[in-house]
Image 1 (cartoon, rainbow, N blue to C red):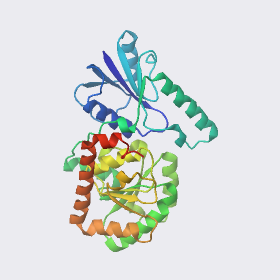
Image 2: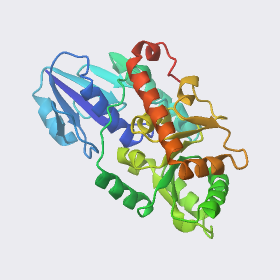
Image 3: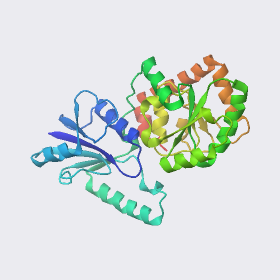
Image 4: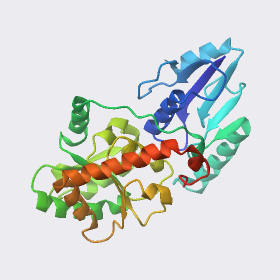
Length: 321
């Protein structure tokens, strides 16, 4: 028997999210009969665990022609020829979050329900195994910093376009106090948002310390290389990424005005980002007190480990949105 995991995803899912979930599934040993696991991808970003092989879409389609016993696991899309085999849908999102207008949402909803009807079973966030996270060498983290911020330590900010200016005001207060190298990396939803974000910082005094990256170009190591991570809004897949940040030992700052589940607010420090001097004071505290920073990182890591152990609590929805 062959288990095909198709990594093509719909509904604007970041590839880093899908690929890491694939690794988590394989690491945890998918609860299906023992079989050959084939990951179908035309650009997989990550290292597959032992016991799985990687194939392009074309290779998988050719192999499936003569295959009589196969199972398909997918994230919303399946490759040609896979439609006639048992399908299991990993539902990482809901198409309602699309922003292209009524027609796009309507079509997405139709496709979403068709996908569910074709699947023998739908797996949601609570069915996923805990993240399987690697450890990185110092040299690897240094290279990530070089790519993201020219080598400087950076705050990694997940904030909407409308909050970039207010976040930079707080960053300016910190930079005036710090007066040395420290950067901020904004993670944008797509290239269009990135271009709009860049236009906002033209003429900004500390422009050389401000960097941008899209979700599509995000790598797991970017989290590990961050000084801290900032989370202003609650998006369905951010909860998985917060787990990455905590598991990799990176301190977490969360905006208390967002609709986070109570359990996730325990992953780091939760306060109102709109409060004057709120973010900047936290930037200062983490920068000047390495012991405090490490204590907060350890706190998040302990939260992550407890979450991994407490499977029943997760199933009961305490860690759900």
